[in-house]
Image (tube, rainbow, N blue to C red; front, side, top):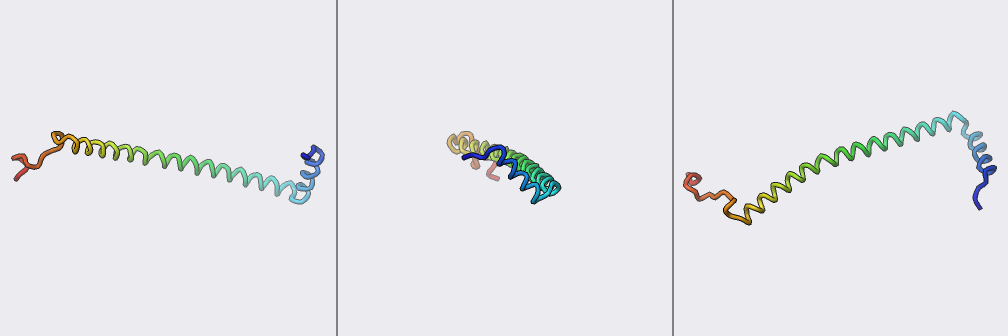
Length: 86
């Protein structure tokens, strides 16, 4: 039940008559601009999403070092040393 080559040619001819050659090429140009705009937007999103990943990684390292200091009190600076009491 598929469309044969002749049926596709007739449909293409009817579309060409209804819209005209100029209108079809204009629509295809607009379609191409839309695709380029979409690709540009996607690449900008990828660039934006890669920057915060570095910040999150840095925060994770800070949190890890804080957790290590809490786990091992010898690593944490003490407030009751004679230099810090002043």
